[in-house]
Picture (cartoon, rainbow, N blue to C red):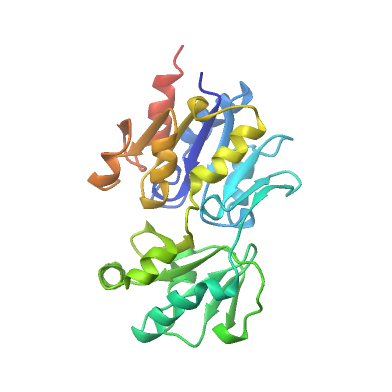
Length: 267
């Protein structure tokens, strides 16, 4: 029995204008009122997606969000942490060296802010993200050795294609490297993904993946699409992502999430 719905945001729940359409909002609010848990799953921190949380009314006592691609599970209402797992600064040495040697940008995120590395070429992450998330200019060597969530390489898609093709094996093996958007490549802790955070949340509610439908479109959604009882891929996804899902719905500008859920829960 499905009791939880996990939703990627960009190019899945959100349309091309970065909005939740009225149709998507309506079905998710209706299912939430019936006791089904609606969980946004994003690479961003919770404050960067708070308007969507409020729009959907996900501010009750047992509403949670999966943030930082699974590295943090946080209760929306009071920001109580259910799960958190990060990296130390030295863990980014390899990707920083790769970026510096190849004139590539890099941003490093803790669990609140983005550090745009000024010792490298300028990043486009702030413009691509288009969020009120706090950005701080900093040199890599000046960052404190605390806990961080991930690194971001934001560039034109062709440049990121080149970076992926020319990435040393040591870098590939040290991180979970995923493209969350054509112009964003993420370097996450090995073994970390959205399904890790979802597993923690499902256990919290005495549920398992048999109780889950997930929706996604990109590399950083693969694990949660595979793990869920039903992994639903958007029609705007690439063919390799579609191939790993259980079904394909309409694209993100055609209310694909709502279209699938209306049919699935029609009774």
